[in-house]
Image 1 (cartoon, helix red, strand yellow):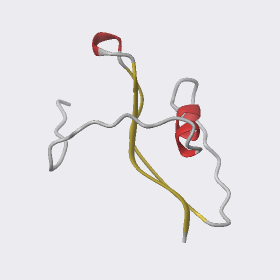
Image 2: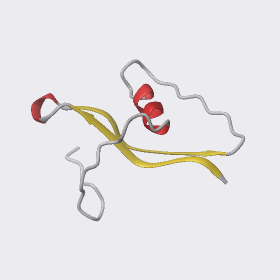
Image 3: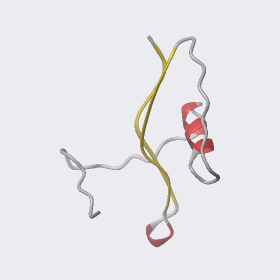
Length: 73
């Protein structure tokens, strides 16, 4: 049984050319009784993820077309 579940969470700050993508389609499942460490370099979105998981901030909602997301790389 999962205690915490986030699916495809994204967070964007700013607008247009000043957009900062703090999180991009992050998914996380934490089972009851589990211990989890959130680790990463500065600016990788750790605090943003935990703030959204704690319901202190809302994720950015964007409409996406159905199907796989294509990459230019």
